[in-house]
Length: 206
Image 1 (cartoon, rainbow, N blue to C red):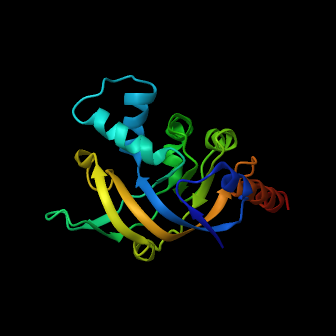
Image 2 (cartoon, rainbow, N blue to C red):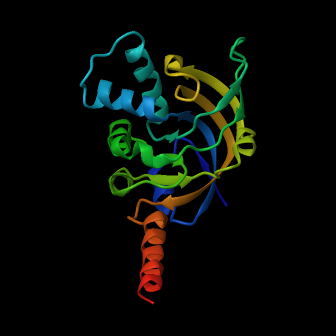
Image 3 (cartoon, one colour):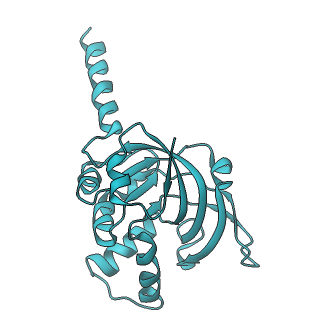
């Protein structure tokens, strides 16, 4: 198990390979479909004009995402009325939904890690090699366990997206994950797809 602090240095990223277990500690941001769409349309491709608090949120998150991580997560949050926020559940969301956005977001913000479940595709893998960066597979079905690693909810942006889609700024300690896409062009997900297809082809032709 390798302990990894956020933000993550290039040397640490390059030392990681698929299959390596890690524990993340530091500050990261949650973001799902609405957040990625907003980042790309408003500030990367600029197909819509910033409005409301858009610029302030952008200025705040870019400091955290530089060298940092985004977590594909729609948390269950208590304390919404009092703003004494606590994560009751923090399981990963399926990451493939963000494939159309992720590489652009990684490059724009200088990110070093994407955390989610299920892996991502060729565009994200290419960005991992360029940045450098890694994709970290979190444990599906362990939402309550992962929530225990969230030691502080430091704030939230874009609550108008709704609680699961908002961008929660969280401090984590010993957040468990496994490197399944690395900066060296390797993807455990692609390897499994290839080996599974080979088995299927043998079964079909038998």
